[in-house]
Image (tube, rainbow, N blue to C red):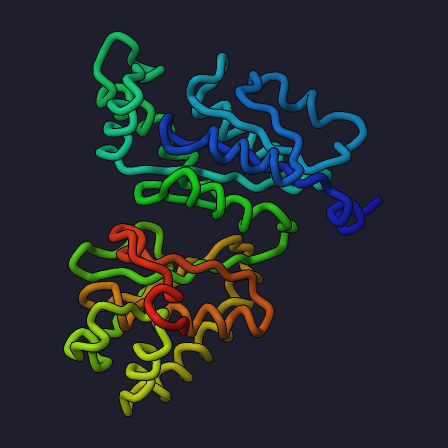
Length: 304
């Protein structure tokens, strides 16, 4: 049997790792709910045995981190390479990351000790673990930064990315943000739309956001909008197959404006709709609206 023949029937295996507190348990639970067979904290020396024999009937999710009994960076890297070279396994390494400050806050809120520094401070444990995981982060197929995510956000991203994913799919996230708070982590492509006319200066639009039909129409009225949107959409449609051909599993596109409420939100909504219309698996996020707990467009008097 050739490699080409076996790859089509290869079981999908997702290896989930990342620093403690970054959301591994949430990801594991989300995959289990999506139909994966889940094994968490499996001793690494048992992994080859698990994949011997008949392939599993369902896709498999394996949770592994520095708390595993026989964990070592070199050992896990060698295991990943071994699995990737096996034509009978379709492997994705899912790495969940998070900023140190947010990890510290999460440990403080739960009053947990860090598993790698039980008699020291959580910051010490975070630093130790981060150094151990640097090479593994670099080899990840899918990287999700949970710094600004709630457990609900992470679960939704996991279900979207992995719930119905095959080994060759590419999922896309389009998100809006404010330049005042910096670029979101993990962006692949970022576009500045502060050149478009700003609904903030219109009294009747100021309290609305870019999901609202009136705001979107105002932005479309900018004489530069039509050509810019056409070129950006064309660029995205052109590039996505190329990223997919290179084996990329996820692409993150961001639109930024001054406040992250009007122009970037409208552009995100429009590009996401365009990509979905041509068949791409797309999700969208509005960072500043999520932070401010904005009302839904329906409550604002109409949806874009």
